[in-house]
Length: 368
Image 1 (cartoon, one colour):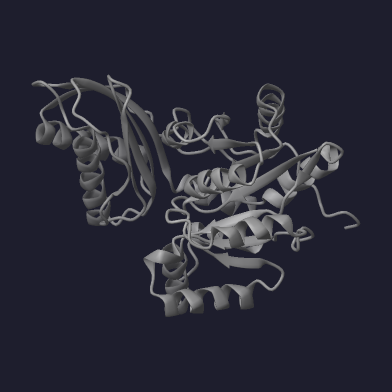
Image 2: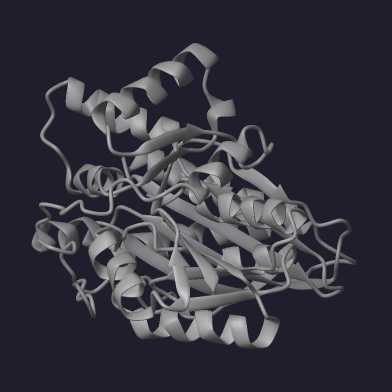
C-alpha cells in the first residue's frame, strides 16, 4: 500500500520547495519517497532542482492532473515499479483547483485498494494571501485570480502557510488564526520550507484523517478558465556562450529576473512566478526565482564557478498577453547578455494561455 500526498496552491507559494523538503524529511524517517512535478507546458525549471536533491522524480506536463489524470496514474505506477517507493508527493499546476472532485476522489474510488490518499494540502504564500485580503477589505471586486486562490483554500484539508519567516511573528499568528476561523474544517499549519522550521507540523497533518473531503466547490468553470487565461505561460530554452573565458551563470539569471521584475512593475503585470535554471558545460547549475513584480529574485542555488557555455531554461507565468511576455523576456535576456558578456541563442518564444480545463473525472462526495 502506497501513500499519495497531493499538493495544490497558487503560483509562487513554494510547493516545490515544500515537496522537496518534506520528501527529504520523510526519507530520514525511513520512507522511500518519490515526487511528481506538473505544469501546463514542458521543460520545467523545478524538475531540474528537484532531481539534484532526490532520486525518484517524474513529470506530468501539458496540463493539470485533473485533465491528465491517466498520465498521473501512469507516473505513480512507474515510480512504484522502478524505485519501489512507498510514498509519492505530487504538486499540481499553480493555477489548478477543484482537485478534491477531479483527482482526490477518483484516486480513492478507483485505486483505493492500492493507495492511501493523504489530505489535500493547499500551500499558501502569506504575502500573496494578505494582498488578496487587503483588496477585499478595500471593497474591490474579486478578480478572477483572487477567485481561483479562494477556491484553492476552500477545498483544502490542510492549509499549509509557507514562508512564515518572511512576515513578523505577530502578523503570522493573526494570519493563522484568521485562516482557522474562516476554514473550520481545515487543519492550518505554518512553517518555512526553506529553513525547515515547523515542517514537522505539516508532516503530522498528513498522517491525520482528511477533514474536508466532502467539500463541494461552488465553482464556475468559465470563471476558472478565465483566471487561467489571464496568465501568459512561457517555457523557453536558450544556449549561452561566454564572449571570453567564462561567464557567471548566477549573475546572468539574476539580471534576467531583475529586468523582468522591473518591467512587470512598470506595466502593473502580476507575476505568478518566474524561474530560471542555467546549467553550465561542466554540469553545475544555478536556479533563481521571482514571485512578485518589483521584487528582487530569490537565489535557490548558485553555480559554483564560471563556465564557457551553458543552457538556460526560463519558466514565466505573468498576467499579460503572451506577445507582451515574449517581448519582455527577450529584452531581459538582451540586458543580461550585455551585463555578463554572453551571447545567447533562444528557441522561438512559446508563450501561451492554458486551454479550457476539462477534467477526466469530476466526482461528488460519497452519498451526495
